[in-house]
Length: 111
Image (cartoon, rainbow, N blue to C red; front, side, top):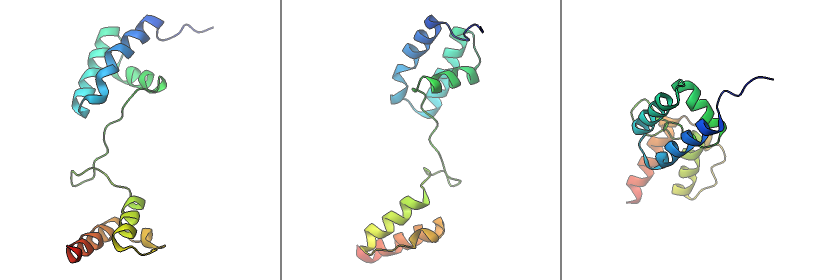
């Protein structure tokens, strides 16, 4: 039988150190994972994987090319339906850029 990669003490230490991560920025969380790795003598990748297996790891916020938070096309299509009040079944067939432009245009007309 293979010896466990993490002792129960290492896991407890890791979880205790990572507990405040939900109130941190992405960069602060990355530094925290590095600190944990240094503390318990593991690699950052190993610590990230263990935190993921434990169900507590918070992934980096997805960012689009323009630096804005990433938005899914389905969410934009739903927003277009909300803005227009119309049952636009095929709205998600538009590309993201066109959906954004259309939403902005309709909002400018409304208000």
